[in-house]
Amino acid sequence: MVHIRDVWVNWFEGEENGYNVCDFHEWRRDDRIEVLDQAILVYVSAELFHYIENNLSDLPDDLLAEVHQQSYLRKNMSRIQLDYCFIATDGERIIAIDTMGYKTPIRKSRLTPRQEQMVYEQLKQNEFKQFELTEDNEKEYHILSPNPNDLRGLTRKERQLKQLLYMALDQLYSSGTDAEVRYWYTEWRPNDYMRIQLLGRDEAWEQLYEEIREGWTQRHHQLCEAMVRGQAFFEKLWELEHGASVK
Image (cartoon, rainbow, N blue to C red; front, side, top):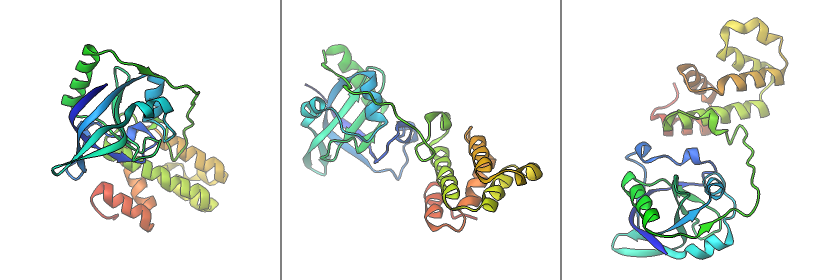
């Protein structure tokens, strides 16, 4: 068994998709950084790495048995043994996982560049058993679990705001009237008012959804701010990410 020591982790909890587990350069001052006194390193196939990074499903039993109580959290002057905590790599990508005692990858973290380099050095110096994914797992994306292509190239703040916009759009689909759907599509495309008024509800919503999927611009920002206004839960998420109340 190979262990990495003094590992800084910035846990992202309950994240289904790897794009929400931020790289080191996107960590923030108010993120809660912890230190693993030691963490076991495991080598996994590319398919299993993708599964670990982009799911909240049960991990393979042989992997769990390998990592059981092999990692420790440093807290003050104490070492706290963790049931199923480990660093996984497929030789290219790296991620830290803590199941919090369960069988699913509940907490996920990237590593600092220094620790990533230590992982690559260990791969060169040691032989590892490779853990495999033993079942097919074709993930389906949807508006509340967006395709990574929808968020590619965006900053952490932009990704969070775009997912907030998707949440507001999903609520609009669930509870908005025909007039409300056409209104918000018109807010996005004001010069197309006459055409939009002739669209059916589903057609208007689908076109709006498709048009906002690419990138993140000032128009996206303005639409998001307008759609969350007056909705306490969405406004709170806006404030957490934007650092200011909705205007």
